[in-house]
Amino acid sequence: MKPLVGVVVSNKMQKSVVVAVDRLFHHKLFNRYVKRTSKFMAHDEQNQCNIGDRVRLDPSRPLSKRKNWTVAEILKKARIYTPPIVDKISKSSSSTEASSTPSA
Image (cartoon, rainbow, N blue to C red):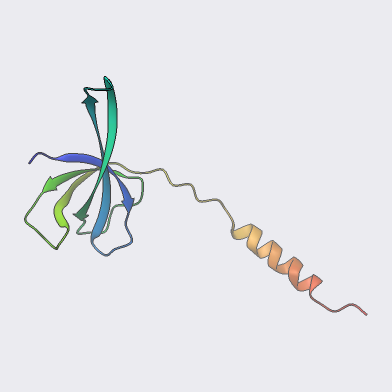
């Protein structure tokens, strides 16, 4: 089997990821190219993969019931935006403390 390239869609497991691999094939009846997606479980030894990363999978011996692939390398890391919410939380908590005092 040859190596596959796909996108990580889940990394909730320890040392395992789920990778979605897209492929195009020509449909003879419709005379169009059709995209199909296959999901593979792969072994990630250092837990380096995040959701959205583009990875290359190499075939390996069966590691579990559904896991027959290993992550060979991370081709492109996902750009994850984390908004700066620390200041907003501290401001909102101080305003709620002031409003929570009973007024007579």
